[in-house]
Image (cartoon, rainbow, N blue to C red):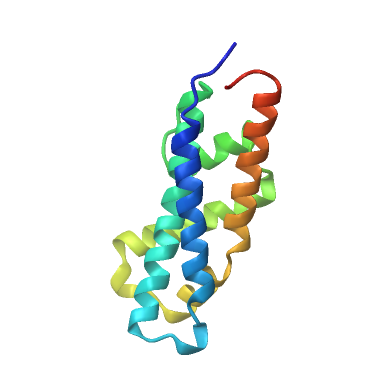
Length: 144
């Protein structure tokens, strides 16, 4: 069975996630002024959105079970072996932090921004995991 997976959309989202990583790596924590805080907050927010969007496109394209929310998207990616349990756990932490960024932005602490802003390895591993999964599915003839 050939799945209709929008790999172009996934590629665009992964490239945008790389831009978020670049912003986070360029933001100097020791120079955390208001502009840098806003840049880090936005880059982390968009990085999480990229991962969720990629997951959603994969779930739709590969006809995986319907998610009930953002955390469920991460669970499905883990269940379908797109990502491992360690990565899933770290992504879930970021999804919870996304809630603060979106709903409780006025309560953000500089320490939280530093912690989540410095962890670019999670995003890099997500990109690698998704690309590996897609390569495997291509090799099996499941996607074009």
